[in-house]
Length: 159
Image 1 (cartoon, rainbow, N blue to C red):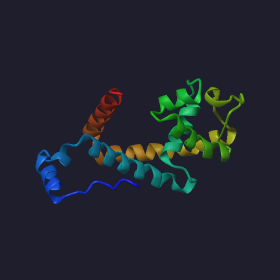
Image 2 (image 1 turned 180 degrees about the vertical axis):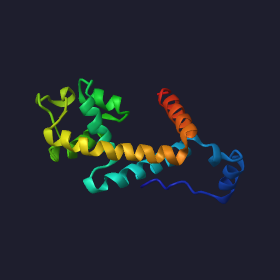
Image 3 (image 1 turned 135 degrees about the vertical axis):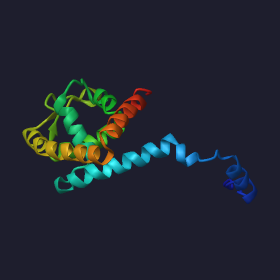
Image 4 (image 1 turned 120 degrees about the vertical axis):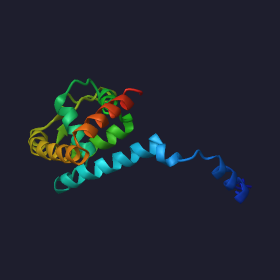
């Protein structure tokens, strides 16, 4: 016999609502960073749409072009992605002929590089990335831009 899900009551909901801190959603770091990330991602993705790529894929192409990683796991750590998410993001780039594993490594030893096609595409995409950066900087203003850069760097260093 399957277990029944617990019944919820309006009394419990009322108690939970009564316990919420004043202005919780106004100061919630998680909510604010997720909302900001979605806004920024939409801005970049809109510019990249004609190329059929997402902003995460372009960031990944740039990281691969920059180099300095020894494996997929190392690249995933650099990009702050889980290894499985990294592999999901690498697959369409490899299928599109934008990256390749020149040494033919297996599993965790794989190390990708841009193909000529990937390199040429990234060169075309860099001005779009710069345009998105410039638009966001202009929308925020220089002071807020610098503060956001410092704040995001500080948050990222907490990992």
